[in-house]
Length: 367
Image 1 (cartoon, rainbow, N blue to C red):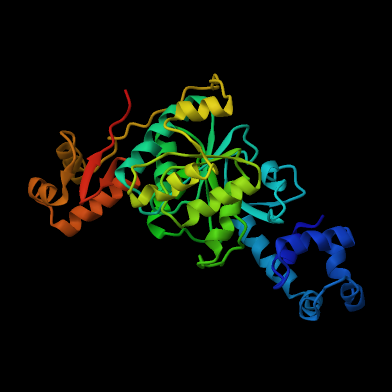
Image 2 (spheres, rainbow, N blue to C red; image 1 turned 180 degrees about the vertical axis):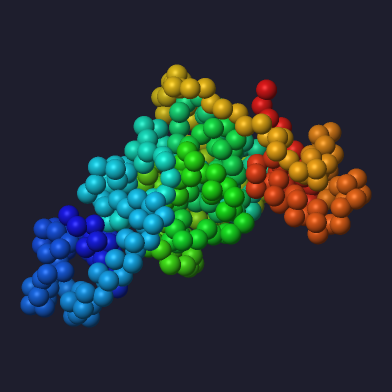
């Protein structure tokens, strides 16, 4: 099948992924869909005249040429759902995208894949769960998928990078941008062993409705979805519900009764929509995984190497334990605005974590 015609089909307003597959099945190929005349299109039960006229205009094919040029220029791979490289787990979902855009080095059909999701308002408890989970999973050769959002998502990606694990971020926009922009440094590092994946063509903005839509990819690509922290209503629960509808395993970490950030996890466990886990060991047992001999040992980054003098001054003050930003201001003698900039850079590089109440803690390399 011509990839440009398949891309074009997804760019026609009114043709969703499910309907696109029906058109492909009816005509046999995307090329034949665009070659069909008005009568052929309107002969399909339920086909609407405005959609037929948009197909006949061929404007979508011109847009597809622009998309293809962009992907070729920036090393973005395009996968049709009929391609061998398309994620096979996702292909089994009825609402799987017809087209996926991917930049990175990870195998989308990795043998062990989990999704890690949670609230954007992560607590230190949730970040610590991500930290320990990834540390313990590192020897099991697992690919971790999340959404590159604030909170649990970015914590999961950071911890994967810290432990030498491949991780893929599923985006709610095109690959011409990163949202939120503050996560660009992490996204760049993810390309080295993991990657960035989206169903949205370039120049697509991160609109509100795109986030629940992309969650089906996060759920559909994985063998299991792990909810670390979740509020009562939110994207993490949507992802868990989708995973359950795809007959995939769902696991959740419990939290304290009354904690807002754990209400969603506790509700999933209470309603038997998720199996409770309290450690990576629980997950490993449930999944029936055995340790694997990796082709090369996981490389642990030297977290404190390559720091500027200013960054090292901050890191040295945090070696004795967590400190409030006001205390760090006094110890380092940096203006608070400048200090906040350095702290953000260190956090984006996975060297420290922000804690409730404007406290910061250094992430020490594992011995």
